[in-house]
Amino acid sequence: MADKFLVSTTGTESSVVLDDIGGVELIHPTTDKDLYKEAPIDEVNSSKDIQDAIDRGAITATDGEGTPISDVEQSDHWVVRYTEDDRMTSTTSDSFRKRLELEYKVDNPGMYRFAWYMEYAQSRRGYPIEVQIIFNDKEIATIVEDNYYARKEYFRTIAGWDVIYLTEEMLTGSIVIAYRSRRGRRSVYIQNLKLTLENIHVHNINN
Image 1 (cartoon, rainbow, N blue to C red):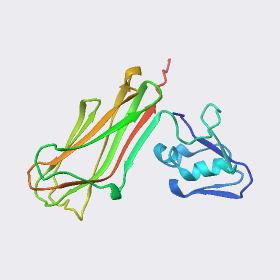
Image 2: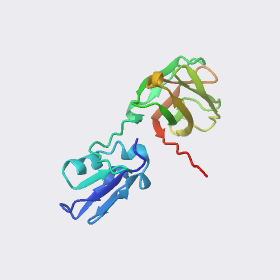
Image 3: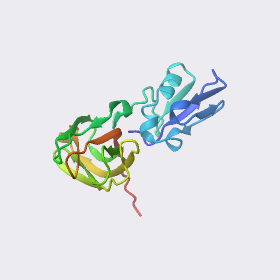
């Protein structure tokens, strides 16, 4: 993944508005504006407005080394999203019967930042819910949330991240999100799930 996402206007349009990264406006002349400083990296790397502006010739884009970017989807960046329309509901069992299993793919080995975000609630308040995050069969996080007020109408948030080194043999793999109520007879709702893998460029500093 590029360290920077530098964009310049070409002059074919007096201004370019990128609504899907927070309404960033590029007024001509703009030169080498780093969009990674304007919006989260995953939003830039999946922006349809940026891609459209590149495709119609309104802006040009390069990485930090001057390499042209014609496709906003960077090779070492993996994102999956589930929206409210894809809300996932557990069974009413107190075991981890509900598991969302996903496949990831990146191109290069190295250090990656794995981040997760989700919103949760359950059908009846009063007992904690538990979420397990399993990366290539290794549990990397177990989150227990007191859920006294997070009923179906009032979703609350779980978010976190970890650093993972991916070898050549781990460029493809699986991520499992398992969730349950600590007490049966309650359904757990997960919505707006977002998972990202970002390559971290580590630089050696010699004193």
